[in-house]
Amino acid sequence: MIDFSGSAERITESTLVIGLVLPDVMGTYGDGGNALILRQRARLRGYDAEVLPITLADPVPATCDVYTLGGAEDYAQRLATRHLARYPGLQEAAGRGAPVLAICAAIQVLGHWYETSEGERVEGISLFDLTTSPQATRSIGEIAGEPLVEGLTQSLTGFENHRGGSALGPDARPLQRVTRGTGNGAGAAVDGVVQGSVIGTYMHGPALARNPELADLLLARATGDEQKDIDLPDVDLLRRERLGRAAREGAIPRR
Ligand code: GLN
Image (cartoon, rainbow, N blue to C red; front, side, top):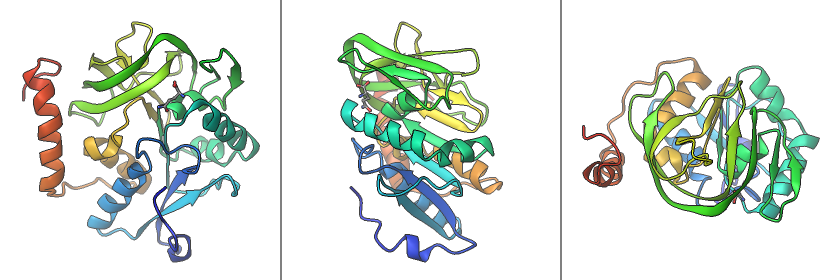
């Protein structure tokens, strides 16, 4: 778990607060890095930004400017579900339009219900109109696709590792059309979910390190400001490496 000690004490009235939800149970595959990417991109643009870790020992505050949740194994995912249902700060924040990013297991927790690989059905918190059931096989590997959401223009990339497949209901839209990998599963060839201010994806990576445009979309919504470009050669290099291979192999269009 990334050490954020001291960050809560640095929060003042003017701080952009990035709520990292339950990193003690929902943080596999470095997903806590998504909060760091948001903090760094905000700071580079001159915002005073801090990450507030919200653990199982804390009630979930409704006051953060933006929230991120990571993936988890089945048991940890169940602990997180119970905590979010007991302290509905995230639901309240999403209700007032706060941006939320939910990765993998978090998509499932934010749906109406999910079935674990053991076949047990667990009630979710219904921020997403979707349900999740185990797929015949686990989906592991690179995922790439084209965004289906206004404000995103660049191909998306990440890696996935999940057994559950999510079926979207009429109030939920997919995040991207998948050209490589499984995404939501069940032959739908789409990944992720967008409903109001809440965005979910099966992409780990962490997703925002690989997809800075998605980070800036969340920041634009959190701040109400357009996020001007920042020159980060290392981030460009990472994208060139990840997307270059996918383009050479025909998984995404060449640009
Ligand atoms: N436990 C869930 C599944 O296997 C989510 C896994 C994850 O977050 N990577 O579907």
